[in-house]
Image (cartoon, rainbow, N blue to C red; front, side, top):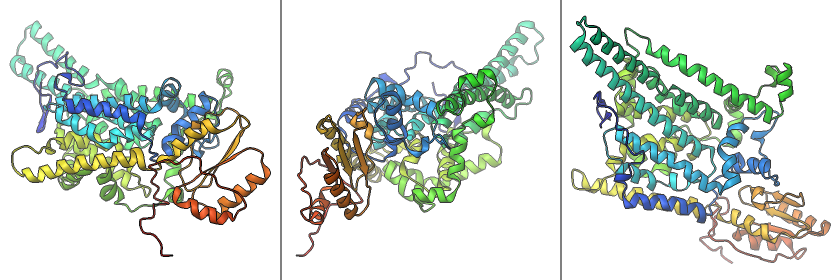
Length: 556
């Protein structure tokens, strides 16, 4: 079954294989199986700390709510103006926190990306083997997708949405072509049986056009509340899906889709908004029953998110970046040579997308134009915002893989050496990024917290973190408020010295200090004998861009 070829929609009326394996098990390679097992192994052994949001936008608030441990609830969950949805967070992260290691749960969720890419590759008329190997070898799946980032959930939701819309395009095209063939053969017939066949063919067109409306609505609602930027990734697939058969002269199939999608979407949004409003304490169930609730009691977190992020000052607080940072820096970091191939084809993608858009040709779109738009549109929209981090682009792995995985082939053929260089670069870069982000980057923070969990005595302690990422207190698993954690970030060592001096003189509980090893001697010199630093344990590797290791010794 071809479904969608690289040249366009395949309108073969043959029914889709009902026994098709979603992951294509008959074509799985040992290398892909190894990479999947490696993904789950890394969940257990990796120690790197990529960004504070992997804890403070998921694990910290959920652990505090469900496990009643001491946590630091970030400002995004402030009840005054919340910009993160509690209900979607509990739905996506609550059960993993309660039942298993969150990283293992995220790895299970990431398999939805594999399944969607494999099924989409089949729709494109390709064997999924090379696509799965390319996908699974990316450090985006090996490391980023196994962390509790909202971006990782956005990646999984976008992969499923992309496959659903691709499948809809194929099904709708087959049904329309079957009707056209039947109409050409029986259009002039007056026999009742022939008219019934034509009516049934038309009904199949309607069913194909509206078959996945509930799925699309669910993905859209959940995705927007998990991360409001999901709508930027979903824009191109939804436009292609919505305006499929827009020029149908007999039925308004666009309206048929809207009539089904809008009520379902509004129902889903209303349910999530109601849950958020109750969880944030803006309204109670009794007030709803008694009819005392109003719009003033409604919490709309995606709206608050947008209001916050459109203000340049707010984004500047998180860091301003050049408008081409995503394009020239983040895409090569995340996707290596796969991203470089995508950028090299960027002009061609834009030309194809604009041509189809200007010709209102969305309803007869080719697969390449569909996937190109799914890559270009979110990249351009996200580049408009001045704050640009690599993890914001995680979902782009899916269209890039479906577009260019076949080019990462070092076999015989034209430009063999160039292709071999691209393949070598791809695997070498991803291996290096697994070591960097999976183990070295801020690698001592979480291990120090795990060690302190065992060292802190029953009467409590004072813990000071200096020149590290913000420590997630949930990893200490302390229910009593007898442990005082001070996160000094990048404050001068003089401030660290004063805090340690005060903690030593005023408190009767032990004080623990966590800081990068290159600063230990400098802090000891500043202490000037007022307190003693006794090393307990060292953790390696720990790489911090704020305090890099000294590669050249200073002259004495």
